[in-house]
Image (cartoon, rainbow, N blue to C red; front, side, top):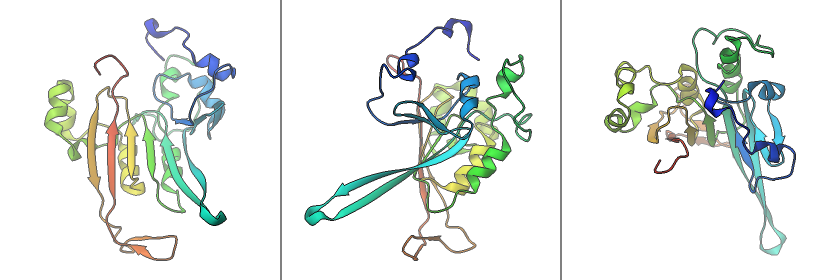
Length: 234
């Protein structure tokens, strides 16, 4: 689903065929201008090309690095990266995944709308904290934790949504409070925006259990960054 002027073949086919290989591991989610028929084939995530991994409609991976130290000692560090694809639309949020190609006019758009069942799977993530969260849509209300005045100055048509706190995805807003990732990266609104969200420790247990059995009683902070289009001077 893209305007006609953008319907041209880019360079991804070279990576898909293996003629080119991404120089570093690339992990991504879908937005609202993807080839949804292909991404539907990997609903739960998977490799779309060598060194390029799709997180699926909702998913998470743990990236591990093994380091050889002096004296033959080995250490392993890890990073959990989670992601939610698509954008929020209340009309389709509580529906199932019914779209099948060839898509009709409505299905061409609803196919990339976030579903509640996928958000529920993300909320169920356990086994330690999420280090990085990736989404296309912004979390609802994240603008309140950054420079709102500058955001509205650069994007005046956001003013009404900012004022009524309806800018961004309700689903992502819930995940922000549940997962409390260290970093959250998004796009969609075509503007660079930074925010820092401070989370209170969960009241039920007073903190998060660490791998060593201890409890982290400190509130977590999420550093949010929205990216603009990759264009000159932007």
